[in-house]
Amino acid sequence: MTATTAPLLAPTTESIAAAAAALRAGSLVAFPTETVYGLGADATDDRAVAAIFAAKDRPSFNPLIIHLADQAAAEALVEMDARARILATHFWPGPLTLVLPRREGCPVSLLASAGLDTLAVRVPRHPVAARLLKAFGRPIAAPSANPSGRLSPTTAAHVAEGLGHRVAMILDDGPTAIGLESTVIDLSGPDARLLRPGGLTAEEIEAVIGPLAGVEAGLGAAIAPRSPGMLESHYAPALPLRLEAASVEPDEALLAFGLRVPPGARKTLNLSPAGDLTQAAANLFAFLRRLDASGARGIAVMRVPEQGLGRAINDRLRRAAAPRSAFPA
Ligand code: TXA
Ligand code: MG
Image 1 (tube, rainbow, N blue to C red):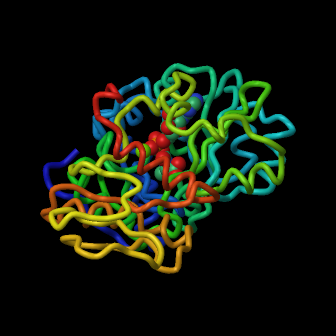
Image 2: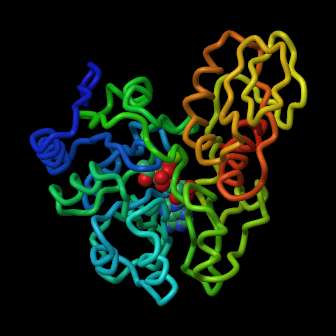
């Protein structure tokens, strides 16, 4: 851990080899995935995993996602049933995380899964993440590369701002394509359950394995003990958020969506003038950061439809708007 800010390195064979070497040495490395930037450590090294929790100031009861090169690597760590294999075949590599029972003798640090007998695993689609996993040859534990409770980073500059002094290096491959974290599905019980809406829509998953539990539950499900990570205050800008805004005050910033934007805000950013949810997801965290720095009194947010990626967008917005006291850290 250094006092200075880590270098931002373009992904090359050399920089990826250096990142793999840093992971082998027990250091933290930030790297891009298709969803958001991750804060990576050797998932089999207790001390390296502990360093993730320390760097983020993350409660240790909030388990991490284990990133893997391919489905075979997942089979070695967790018990994959028929549902898991079908989902993996359809959506890996991609923005889908599966919670499954740990295999006996699974070498992943128990701290990474907060002592649970399940493990959250995903195979990312981003070529730099894939190359890093291949070069390292072991599972990488990686939460989003932001201080706990803050907005997830969609650029290397966001990572540097929040955690630049806690990592050995930041692999910089520009803004992430999806902009929202992976969808988390719990397959450890009889019902496939949505724990966190994300970059893969519930509709796409249901088209493959049928109805998911927890899809309509909204914020209620988010604070259930079933998904420990959901207890913390999350995705929070410094300014208060006001949802479902149809008009705006002159001292407010406006996060708009669609064509019919109320005039008069101190500063307006439009997630997608065309009403495209994919574009809105990609812009969400970066725009919240910019409005947070606009000098406004608060951020008014226009309605986003509760369907497809809109579910994940609204989930993040509701968390950002919720009173902080509702989310004990
Ligand atoms: O897109 C993503 O998923 C990003 C990139 C870097 O891959 N990662 C990410 O990690 O968002 P993180 O740590 O910020 O979120 C992990 C989520 C938390 O809500 C956590 O509670 C949940 O996954 N989780 C992890 N392991 C779990 C388990 N065994 N059971 C239930 N939930 C689990
Ligand atoms: Mg996170």
